[in-house]
Length: 126
Image (tube, helix red, strand yellow):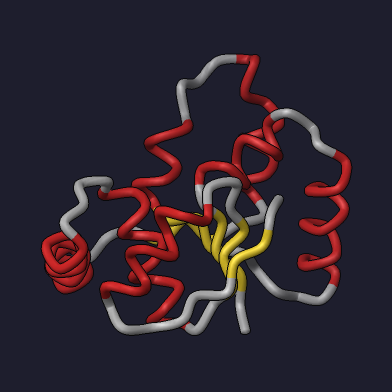
């Protein structure tokens, strides 16, 4: 099982939360590269020196681009769930496809999307 980061995880890294950084380092030591979907990065990234921690975090992640097929799958998922948050749906689509656990500070929306897909999603706090 891999790991996907949502916006809450990236914000925890940006805020230098010790527990999150310890978990992130443990993943890297185990040679497990966390996935940060590109729409999630766009949701959190604003640039500048204040985001140095986020930049450092992202160097240890695979930022997954959104392919045409994935974009369609995300749109279908949003339609089934009656939702509009593209970043959340991208997290769920990718995590379900890869069988990843999601590090999130807002599990309710992600679990609702997974439920609309008829799937179980493993989530943990940052």
